Length: 114
Length: 117
Image 1 (spheres, rainbow over the protein chains, first blue to last red):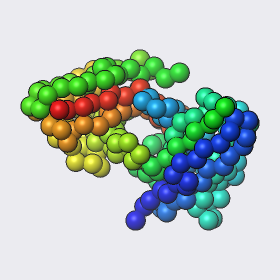
Image 2 (spheres, each protein chain N blue to C red):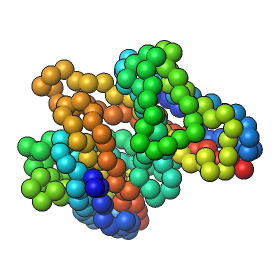
Image 3 (cartoon, rainbow over the protein chains, first blue to last red):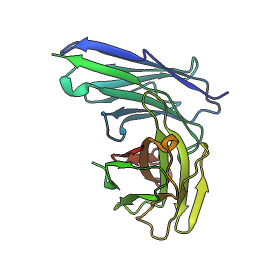
Image 4 (cartoon, rainbow over the protein chains, first blue to last red):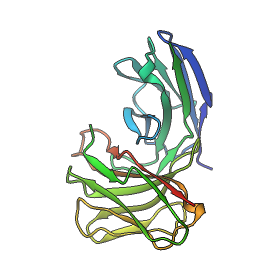
């Protein structure tokens, strides 16, 4: 069964600290993995997209890693800010460059405290 | 910033009412989607369209219907709303990139939070 599991379910950190969110998937075949940020009451916004040949990709203070062999990805947030408080969603696609079937995780709810 | 708009942002209605959730995009994308999301849960695809006059049901069974008469417009209709329809509805659009130019990107609207009493 194709699944995307994220951990932790929720996380609270202090402003300025770093954190790492995890994503494990069983989707096959695998095409690409996406991380989205979703603010409360808003639609998701894309952070990174990685294909199977990419090990790491950065977008400002966000760095995503991918291990296609172990089917794991992580999203590392550096020097967190209050505006980083949001749900972070891992999404795996089973197709090529065109959008195939998307498998969504339930997200990690991150709260950054001052 | 994605140019995809949803209205209304919030809607509270009584059981049995007919409602239409609006979604428009100005990016000229051929592909459009409707997702349903409950708090703390994953997004579920309920409808999608690959172009004008093309609509398909998604993975999650839904009593809603959609239409695609114009490229930029993809409204979702509930003929008779029920409390079980209470949820957040997210519209999205995408376009295939030219060959060799990366993966297709998905752009979401801000969503409509629907509450049926």
